[in-house]
Length: 486
Image (cartoon, rainbow, N blue to C red; front, side, top):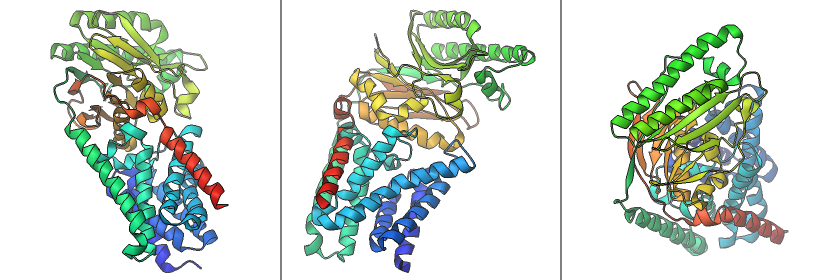
C-alpha cells in the first residue's frame, strides 16, 4: 500500500522535473530529485517503482513536448525509454543503499544516475540530451566542474545532494546520526563552489580578441517547406528554375552581408548550419566568389553550407567551409552526427574527425549543431589545442534556448571560446569559462546579426586530457557496490 504522503512528494518532484526538462532552473532540479528519491525510498518496492516510472513518464512527456522532433506513438515510445533511464537509478538505490548504509550508501544513487545518463549518451541516438547537468546552466561557479570531470560531475553532485538530504530526512535530522554523510557533502560542495568562484575570478581579461559577426538568412525569402524540399534534392523540373532563382538571391544576401560586416570591422564572419543551400553544379562558382570576397576584405569566412546532389539517395552535404583572409580554403568539414530521422535519411556523414586548423590568429576547430551534443567528440578540440571552436547550428523555437545553453558546457570542458550561429534559434558566443559574450534571437524583430569580441587563446583543462574517466569510474564503482551488496 502506497501512503498518501509518499504520493504527494512523488507528484511534487515529478512536477518540478517537468519544469526543469524545459527550462533551466538550477535549484528546482535539486529539489525535484530529492522529493522523487524520498518518495521512492518510502514506498514498497514493486508498487513504488511502478509509481515512480509513471510519475517520471508523465513529467518527461510534458517537459519534452516540442523538444523531441517526433510526434504520435513514436514520441510516447521514446519518452518511455527516457523514463526508464531515469527510474533505473532509483531501483538500484533501493537495492543497495540501505544495505551499505552511512556515507557509502549515499554514493549509490549518484553513481547510478551518472552511469545511466552516461551509458545512454554513448549507446543511444539521444547523445547527452536530458542530462540533469544542463539544468545547472547559469550557476557559473558550479559549471566549472565540467572543466575537470565533464558534465557528469554536475549530475553526481545533484544526485548526491538528494541522497544525502534524504538520509538526513529519514533519520529525522538527528545530527549524531547524520553528521558524517552531511559534513562530507557540505565540505566537498563548498570546496567545489569556492574553487569555481576562484577560477572565474582569476580568468584573464587581457587576451587578444577577434571581432566576430554571425549572419542569418532573410525570413521572407522561402515559404515553409521549400528549403526542406531543396535539401532532399527531389525537385521536379518545374520547381528547379524558380527555386534556383531564390537560391541565387540567398547567395547574394550572404555575400553582401559578409562584405558589410567586414567593412564594419569584423575579422571572422560565420553563417549558420545549412543556411546557404546550393546545387552541386553551382558550388565551384560560388566558392570562387566567396574566396574573392574573403581576400578583398581580409576576413575569415566560415560558411555553414548545404550542398545538394539532386537525384542521389543521400542528397545532402551538411558542411562548414572556412576561407582565410588570403582567399584560401583551409577547411571543409562534413557534419559527423546526423539527427535520427529526416536528416539521417538524406545526409552524407563525415569521417568523425573534428578538424583543428592552425592560423595566424590561433588554432580554429569546427563542428556542426548535433555534433556538439557529444562531449567526447568535441573533446578533439581540446586535445588539438584549439583556441576557437565554431559550431553552426539549425534548430527550432522550442529547443533554441536549452540547445544554446548546452553548447556553453563544451566551451568549459575544452577551455575554448565558442561561436555558435543558429538558424531558427539563438546565435551565441561563449568564452572558455562559459560566460556569455553575446546572443541574437532569430525570432526577435529587427536585425538578427550577432557582433561580438571573442577572446582567442585556450585554457588547459583536465577534461580535455582525461575525457569521461569520471563517468567510467562511476560505472565501475556502481558495479563493485552492487557486487558487494549481493
